[in-house]
Length: 250
Image (tube, rainbow, N blue to C red; front, top):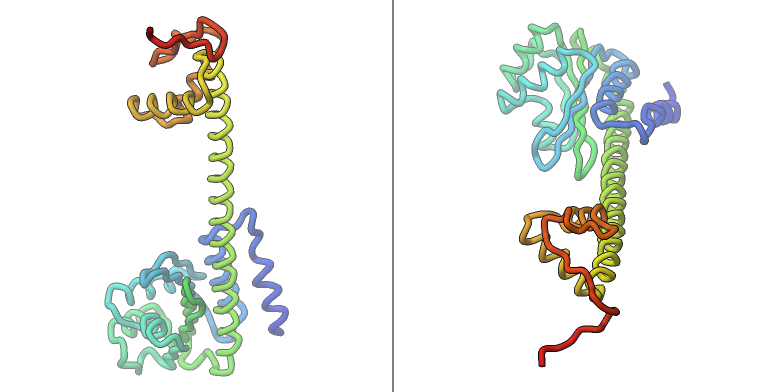
């Protein structure tokens, strides 16, 4: 497959409005397994702040090998993370660097592996597994590196999109809450013949004393609007004269 075609296919895996990180990881693992010659299974693991934060694979055996490395504290994935470079195992039966990993790989029928990293703040670890010794040709490393780089870029895009949607929702909630409080302020200003600052102070005071959010207090004021302030859990004194007609004690 030509590299531009690989980029296009990788990008087409995601539709950001419906994308999730879990879905992206599964699709990327499947893409790697199908496009790198000699690869029979692949796993993609996300690392954030030095900890694994997500994982998916094209075959359950690839997931098992990730867990073996985490349990043992050693393996090609951890070496790749430490060196930020490709780590190759030409034959798991002959390799002595990671005894527990190699033994587990042989039991699962995995005879060679290539592990690569990509990304900065979020690191993507791509592991390619072969069923025969040296099945994954070193010439495939460039292609595998591109898959890892595309994976990191797409996972980052999903994360950024999710963060932007969260921020948008927070802003929308804040705007709706502000509108609710403003409406309640207007009701209280009319009922108490007070200023906007005094009405807001009253809402905040009730909020603190009642252990309620200001928006909840505002909603109750609005619900009780129409003169039926007896529904409120706090007293509101109706105005008895024109606004601003307050007599000071003599």
